[in-house]
Length: 131
Image (cartoon, rainbow, N blue to C red):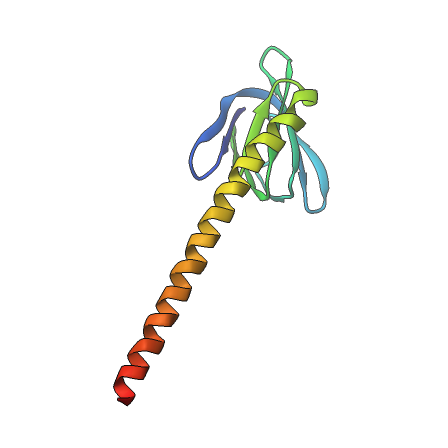
């Protein structure tokens, strides 16, 4: 099977795999190459997959959608981080998501300033019309 894990900005995984284990809203499940076509809503967690050589790898994924169609397993998620070792995945996730949280806070603050400025301009316009 070909596993492809995608975020809005990058393809995190794009490789042949013999087995995929993920967690959906109803619990964890395993996909093998001859599994029936399948669609699942993923919950935040660890997705594990086995390379063609049999080595297990991991990807931390945010909420998303998994689609198995034929020999393709497509995962679309907002955030994903890949690691060959489960032990280092936690540190990588914490570091990556901390950077994203800081960017999100900065963007929210800029949006709030913009919104306040627009409201202030409308108030000024209303005061001018009364005069």
